[in-house]
Length: 240
Image (cartoon, helix red, strand yellow):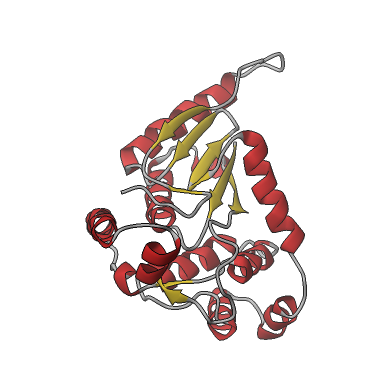
């Protein structure tokens, strides 16, 4: 059963959603029958890159249109989710930057089946450690930690590799009618949008698996059944 996940490093719900999904997968009896593909999504492709990101609170108030009160409320809600997931929370000090090169590093890592590891390290750098994930030296460091060679990382960063793939991922999301992340699409029949609880992920995984096993070639089901939680949309706005 194929699972496709659209995600962006600067989306706080994506980090929590990935952790919840991975915990659910460990409880799923048929995890060995799942193939996973991470898809790129850029909430704001106009943010600065190459280590020139801006404080996330400044981004939210000056560029995304939040009031300071709304930002504080959003941080408080996300902190509760982080505490429940047992992960550190450094979002108020985080850096908002262009995620293009981070996505390209994930694409490179996917060729060696290291994409989940790299994505996890990138998300941790942003959400838990308040590091600028657009900084090339950080990307090199994370890639090497995951098992990539420094030379191949730098060669990729100096090229246009995977730029087309990122555009294709985003166009595919649009074609499917999704404009928020994280979106977990299971067998293109079940979708979980947002950082839903672990038990809900388990429930949807089981439903998707049952449908996948029992579906006939003549199946003409409409689009996926959607379960929606808190997420971030294409305008860079995250739910409070």
